[in-house]
Length: 111
Image (cartoon, rainbow, N blue to C red; front, side, top):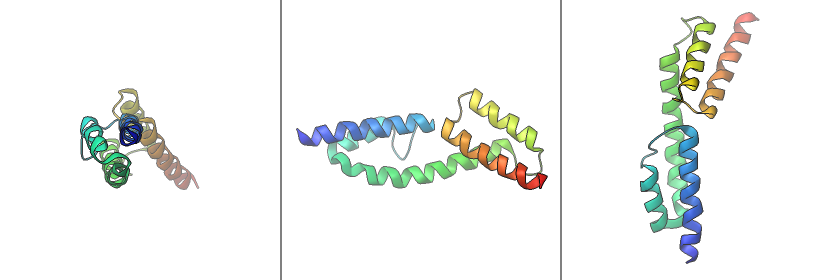
């Protein structure tokens, strides 16, 4: 019983985090993680966090591929970033990370 009491919050936390990142898979689908949590309980947090870091990097790379590199004007890149956010393709966390990078590039270009 205690095994399930620890597995359920872990599975819900993983599902919530995947939804927050707006990704369908972090190695497994959310249902796959739920099944793995039932089998291994809270120990599934470690592999999830390892895979999550890799997925986060890939997500940010994909955003920059769409937004463009420094050969585009910062305003154009910012509009593309806002379009990704408005269409629901990226979550708040990815949007904020990329917006901070754009702000830093803008500040360094101005100075």
